[in-house]
Length: 191
Image 1 (tube, rainbow, N blue to C red):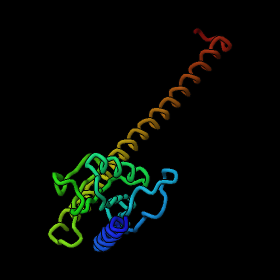
Image 2: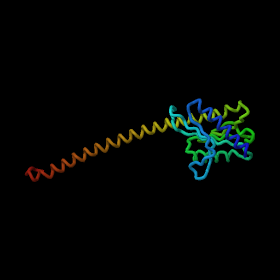
Image 3: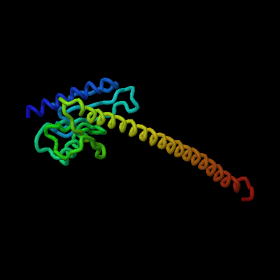
Image 4: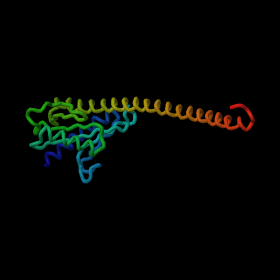
């Protein structure tokens, strides 16, 4: 367990340093509960900086140096970590010492990445960096798609307002015509 906690701390330290280079804020969160009652899923959280194209977007990191963690168990845990920390993307970091032997060092699964990293081997840094960079880029893409959808909703809202306005004008014309029709017989005019 102590090895696992040490690995989590080293991963968080690495992620914090990488995040500072791009203006994001990363922090260790493994000792605090999240949105899921009494659960601490998620070891480190990256919040994209205010100068990015997706300010406030979140990426959660779950780090494990523990024997017996399968690929499927990792996917389940990173999914829970994403939900627990209200993050859009997740990165599960296996320690190279305890990762399943047939696991690829970098893979994407829907909103999550699985990476294998060794804190003592700088050649594996590329996998963790790639996970962070890919998750950030996908936050940007998601934000751009949201902004495009928001524009579409604004267009729809404007069209609905225009229809309501025109409907109001038509109602005024109808009321005027009804009033005119009611006054005709009283004025002795032919209908």
